[in-house]
Image 1 (tube, rainbow, N blue to C red):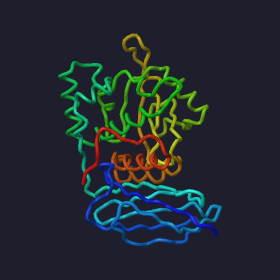
Image 2: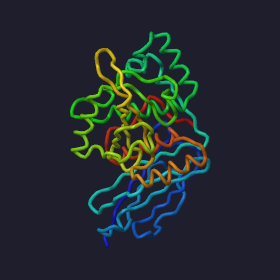
Image 3: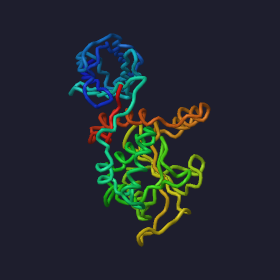
Length: 304
């Protein structure tokens, strides 16, 4: 049996190293379900040098991190090797966490995402955006989604480049788990091409979980917190000469459809809750860190 090395780095909701004066409990379990580590640490940067390497499924480790007053965090599978040090970055956020939108001022957001106020004058757009800031969770969700969409490389541009107007009317207004927008119909073909190169997977029967939807694709780049693009092609409008349909964007906690239904949709339905943007923020950040993709860094941070 060989030896594997794991470097564990712990961050807080500001995406900075965890520096709170509390001890962190680390649990490490190998793929054989053997508990190898269960101990408290004061550092946010830990190196475990002598973990077993099996050269089989036993190397698919589970790593869990917890601290008093903070939500548990962890990742599976963490694939270890005897030839290099695997690095895992996890994020701990407070159980009473909040938001800081200091970097998401109206001028910054409008310049980055002009479709937010494409249908109104600046004063109206600013006022409407101010309502989102007050609501907090719908804004956090919106910033999560545009950050994720802006990092998806389609054959031509990103999904953000095809959005013409955010929808604010009635039930289409931004929510804490999704937003709707008018998008150029050519985005559908771009996503189909993305599916052909394993960037997306088409969801069957999209109308069941997304009433009125005609097609829906989920990103398959990460094990958790993948972006979903759902099209409502019967809802049409022409904007500045461009044929548009309604696009619904959301992020589920889980990629697997059954896990999504039984671990997210059903529990949320029973408790009348919606997907929490803080959970999405943490899961998407950690998944991106493990996949070694550009950092998920929306224009806000999570505070204690």
